[in-house]
Each structure stands twice: as structure tokens, then as C-alpha cells.
Length: 346
Length: 255
Image 1 (cartoon, rainbow over the protein chains, first blue to last red):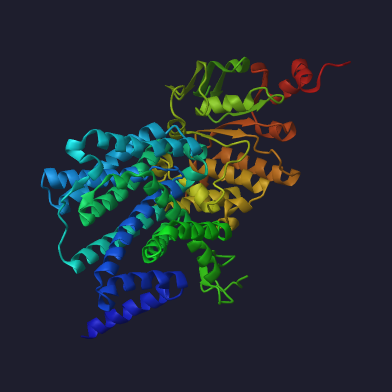
Image 2 (image 1 turned 90 degrees about the horizontal axis):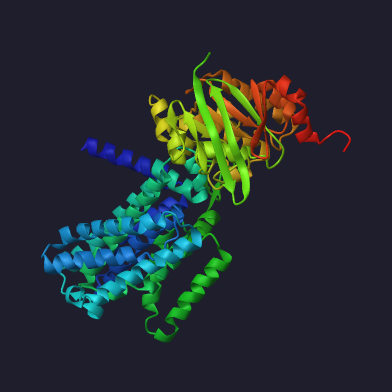
């Protein structure tokens, strides 16, 4: 018993020293807690369904950020990875009768292959040209899908997939935990040495080459990682909706991902996730007003980007936190001195 | 006679009708410091870019420690021990200064050279210490002045622990005091030894520079380029007395 109390005390100490010192960390902790505890408050199937879809799209937006926000490889065809993941896991599930536990990872591997196929011709391209080329790939795949209706169901898509579980709460926890784990992994990747090289490639590729780093390999790695996470999102989507249709490959899908990520703040990972959690439910709740839905969406995004060009979340973060001029540690903006080096703030 | 480190044979690069580097051949010994001078547009920077593989030569060969470098990718050449700095510095502006150097510490060569140092940060910090900008390690690279950016370039070059270092105008845009400091660190780097946790064997260097006074103090030998060809070659004393060189730099007497 004493031991348990000791551990609880230790845990509380860590929480107080590391999490409770910064409002951004508190909000991330609250976000985790609210998501996990939501079924205690409401079990409305409609709300649960929206949160599940939001989680799936949060993975997708974060994976776009990994490739385009961090590595600077502007991908305007991110729906390709999502669609490949969805269609591959649907084909495996319906035709080969592989259960979702197997078909989603295999679908993600198919999306990794798609990442390689897109990445190799795109290695020589930059900026606008890269964006235009990547835009073409999902359209090409859409053409192939319409050309092979026996396999892919054409316009109707593949339907009749099995779900992970039939229980509402089972599905809910599966999706939010997958989302939280995958986004944490992505954030960890961007925080590692590999993430540093991704950052540097975005800033100046030639300088990274003269550092003796094989930039080709790292760019392909970025394409594959991004494809993997987007593929998982696609597979989860297909299995949850029980259909993999052409809508997963549409151009509007690619652009919505870009808008989410830029609205939340590119090159942050947490930005796009937060943006999806703000924008997607918001759009769902103004459903009763269908004519103006897209207009509202457009205005919100436009005004946010006009006044917060870095994105919403970095803007909010800069308001509530200050960076110490000496040791670059972040502090609550109400503090007068830095919590580590005690240098005066502002 | 020391071993030959670098052998360049009839290297040629054309940009359209212009022969930027035309049939250039020279040799370098280990630990030699070579100055490369010439008027603007003589092909000095192009020559350095050909050596590092950023540009592909039209013909000719570059042999470094017995291996042909022409046709290899830039990162591969750098991993064989050639490092270069840029004339117009190319920092990662939105990254902290230490991260700028850490990227250079992450190359396979530099990971291999100091494997007993576990932390990349420590190595990067030592490189910054050597260049003298460690006090600003956590600032963004965009706040650096011209002189500090030059020092950052030196820190990055040290981090890859090269055997041949190509410096493109290391004194460009520096004040006299900064120039002296820079010349001192280049000299210290050339002498080699331990810099904190980093180790340098005293690389050979090719220095492109316009400030001849400072250059003369550092280099063993000078090559003068003009219109892409070698105009003169020799010790600093010989070169400054060469009438052709004086003509190329200052124009003919009586014009």
C-alpha cells in the first residue's frame, strides 16, 4: 500500500513539474482526458460517430503535415494515400476475407508502395511543379478504378466491409486510441534526428546534400511514412463506413486536408490535429444549414489565415506562452521570470 | 614528397557558349593549403562546385585519394571527406543555430568518425565553440550577422571532419577584425588536433578569396584563374610578381 502511495506521489510530482507548468501541455492532457472520458458524459451515437470520423481525419491531416509541412514536399494529392489505403483494405477484406486487424495494416503497406511510386518521379520536382504532379496521381487512380468496375465497383465503390467490432464503445475507443498513438508517434518522429533532417530539407536541400546526407533517401522516407499513416486512416475509414468509394480519392478530399493542416498551423503535427477537431465537428453541427455550410467554412479559414498566417494553434500558443530570451524555454505568459534560468522575460 | 590527395585533370564545364572552367588541371598534396584567385567570373566558384559534385563537368576527371569523384552524388563525395562552404551562406534560417550544425553531424561520415560521442548535440556544440558562436547556439539562424554566418559555415565544415575543405570566400563581407579572427580559426583548423569532443587531422584546403593580403599569410601555393583557365601557379611571392597576373587584375600599364 505504501509503495502504491509512493508511486502515486512520484507520478503527481512528474505531472506537476512537467505538465502543469505550461498551458499548452495542460490542454493536450485535457484533450486526452476528455476524449477518453467522453462516453461517461454522452453515448449519443451521432456524437460518437462524429468523433470517430474526426479522429480518422486527424490522422490524415497530421500525415500530410509530416510530408508537406515538415519536409516541404508540397503534396496536393494526399487523397491518393487515403484512397489506396481504403481500397486496398476493402479489396483484402471483401475478396480475400481478411479481418480488419489484418487488412488495415496491409492497406497501409499498399499506401507505402503508393508513396514510393509517387515519390520516385517526384524527387526531381520542387514547389509548384511538385504540387501539380502530385495532384494528378489520385485522378489517375480514380480513372483506373472506373475502368475496372468488376474489381472496384466503379462509381459505387466496394461495400459490405466488416467492422472491427459491432459495439459503439469498442469502435470509439479503438479509433481514438489509434489516433492518439499514431499522432504521438508522428510527433516523436518530427522531434527526432530524422525530423531534424526533414526540417533542414525543407529549408535548403542543397545545404543538406553538402552535409553528406542522402536527401533522396530521406525524401522517399517522408513519402513512405506519410503514406503509411494516411493509409491507416484510409483503412480505418473504409472499415468504419463499411464502404470504400471514389469519394476517398476526390480532389476536394486532397484540398480539405491541406486546408485543415494550414489552418491549424503547418509543421507542428498538433496544429492539424487540433484543426480537424475544430473544423470537422463545426461543419457537422451546421448541417441544418446546408446551403451556407461551405461558405461558413471558407470564411472561417480565410479570416483565420488573414490574421494568423502561421496558423491558429501557433498563434494561440504565442499568446499564452512566452519564450525565455536566454534559454529558449517556454513559460506561461503571466510569469515575470523564466522558470528554469530565472532570467527576466520580455 | 607527400602523398597526392587530389588530382584534377583537364576539367571542363560549359554554360551554353561560355567556358566557365576550361581544361583545368592541378594536383594537391595532403595538408596543403591552396589559394584560388582570379577576377570576377573567372570560374573559381564553378570549379569548387565541380569538385563537390553540385555541378557535373562536361569532361575531365577529379581523383580524390585514388577514387574518381566525377559522377558521384554530392552527399557521397562529402562522405568521402570533401567539405565545402558556400559563398552566399545557406543556413537553415528557421532552425536554431545548433540544429544547423547538428544536421551536419548526422551524416554517416561524421557519425562514424566520433562514434564514442553519443550525443549529436555535444558534437555540434563543440563545432560552434570552435567557430566562436556557441553563446548564440539557441538563437534562430535568421538573427545572425554576415560575419557570424561565415563562422557558422566554418562550424558546419568542422562538424563533417573533412580531409579536403573547400572554402568559398571565407572573408567576404567581413570587417578587418573579423577577417583576422576568421584567418586565425582557419589556421587553427589546418593545424589540426582536438576541439573538445571533435577531432581534426588538419585538412587540406582550397580557399577562394579576393582579400589577397590575408590569403597570402595562410596559403602555401596559389593558382590564378582567368576566363576559366589557369593563368599562373606558384608560391604567393611568385604569383604577385607575375606580370600576367598583374595585368589580369589591374589592367595593362599605360591603358
